[in-house]
Every structure is written in C-alpha cells, then in structure tokens.
Image 1 (spheres, rainbow, N blue to C red):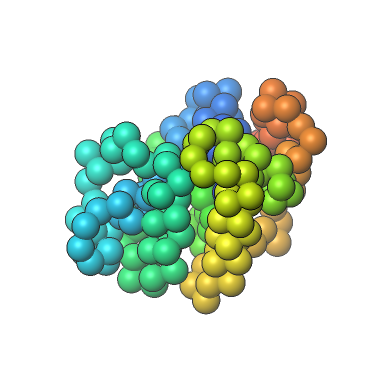
Image 2: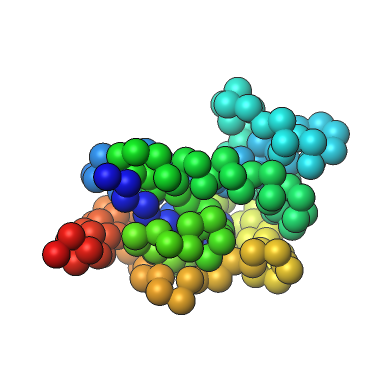
Length: 199
C-alpha cells in the first residue's frame, strides 16, 4: 500500500524535522525536496542542465544546509524549467511502494495534489529567523531575518508553484511549540487522517 504525506511550509518552520520524525514514526521513506533545489543551486553552470543531470551524489554535499545554499535554492526554484526537470523525480518517489513523506514548498499543491495527508507547517518570520540563525551560525540575526523575509517574498510571489497551503491542508503553527510538541501534534493529525481513510 502506498500512503503519501505532503508537508509544506516556509524556511525554518520545522517541516524538515517534523517530516523526518513522521517518516520514522509511520515507517515511510522521506524526501527533503528542498535538497534537490539546494543541490541544483550550488552546482556550477546552467541551473536547468544541473536539474536535468542531478544525481544522488549531488545530494550528499556537506554545504547544502548552509545559508548560501538556501539562497541559491530560492533563486533557481523560480525557474520553470528547473521545476519541470525535478517534478517527475519527486512524483516517482511519492508513489513508491510502502509510502513516502515529502517536504518542500509545493508538495501538496503541485507535486502530490492527491496526497493522503497534506500538512502546512508555519511559524512567524521572527521565530524562523532565530531558528535559522542558531542552526547556521552565520551573519547576524537581523541579516538572517531580512533573508527569511526576502525568501518568503520570492517563494510566495513566484508565478510557478508559489508557496501556499493546499485547500485541504492541515495547518500547524510551530511558533510557540517545542520540537517534541510539534512532532507529536503532526503525528496525531496524520494518524487521524490515516485512520479515517482506512475506515
């Protein structure tokens, strides 16, 4: 049986941590689709060619979690040809036997519009900037907040697959939640949807 969970949200809302925990909890494969865009953004040359030739080794780069890689990902993600090149890779992963959890910006709206569960994880820009600053340790908090807001504007304002909750997505605001609380709440929401689908 294939069970697909689509988890979307802005940068540093906690969707990656939640997605990995959900995958472990329910025994599903996990794909951080943002890594695909980070890897494309960090490759030299034409980003469209980079997306078309992306391989597993590209996803193992140690610098893909850096602020630089995040900025690069946001820049190449607005290119329709890049998104098209990565679309099928993501859909194949989502349809795998045994089920999958995918997290990104447009999983519930574009990649997997028929996902069994759609979760939109969010938090205030200030909270997300503080998390990203603590995680990356680069620049100043004010600079990171400016980057977060600029990235939000790019991600929500792009013409192709803008960041937004799917109409049937469950919203999880993690602004005032600990990691454990956010994971518990996400797993509870997903289990309820899964159980309802089985009945």
